[in-house]
Amino acid sequence: MTLVIENISKKIQNKPVLDNVSFELKNGEIVGLVGRNGAGKTTLFGTISGKLLPDFGRVGLDDLDYAKTTWLHDQLFYIDMPENWFRYYSPKKIKSILKVSYENFDESWYDSEIKRFGLNNSKRIRNYSKGMRALFTIIASFASRAQYVLLDEPLDGLDVLIRDQVKQLIVSQVTQHNTTILIASHNLVELDTLVDRILLLKDQTIDRTFTIEDNKTIKKYQLAFVGEELPAFLRDSGTIITQTGHVVTIVFNDFSEELGIKLAGPEFKFVEELPISSEDVFRASFAEEAFAWQQELEVES
Image (cartoon, rainbow, N blue to C red; front, side):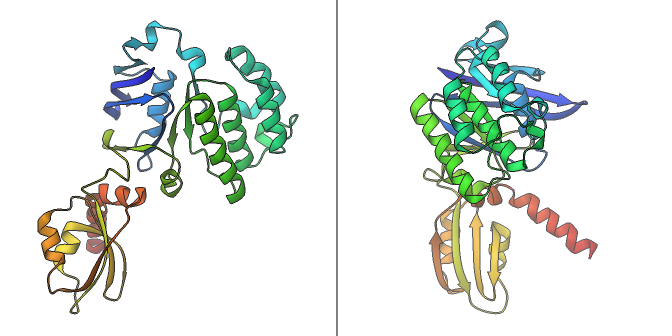
């Protein structure tokens, strides 16, 4: 069974937010969704879940449109973060609601996780800390036993120890129940250790889908240049991450043989290729915007 998001377009207050968004989610996948603030991640989640109707396109299982089926009712779980109806109720009350909404709701697992993490079963969710609210939402999501779970910043507000436990929980639920997870997050370091692949939302659409292992065009180097000034082609062709004196760490979005030849030239004392992370891909994908923003700052100053 595959969840198909096909050619989704959506305007909010007559402003385009999503434009021709297409991808698929297969059983047992953990997929990351990244993009800049305001890129449309929450709108995309709302459209996939049926909270928002697309202006164009479809969401369905393989060749079935969800508007013509009842699968969505208990096969997809999504709760807006941070504000949602959970805040008005206690875990005990929410359990009684979810048991009616989700046919396969796992009551015993829900109770055991509430107890394991020391959550107050009678306290309203709005009185929880930010981290505990996030943790409760994750527990409720998996207890639904929905096939597809959409998580919006699920690790936000969690301390390091709880975050590690939650990541283990996510992986174990995917392994045990073949659940499919779509995670929107700004924490790209966390995504690197958790997801199978990442979708980059840019300019209202999915700009690229990538895995770190399969990436061929983005390269990251640390190098030391000769002379007083940074070679101009570096700034023109790549994104400078750090520079300390003559030592530079740089990411190239579209690495070419020509760039490789230049890096092997006499302008550099040493050049070392470094492992790529999701953060590097993200920086490289928005290199042009960052350059334009820097130019504006220089003009203003």
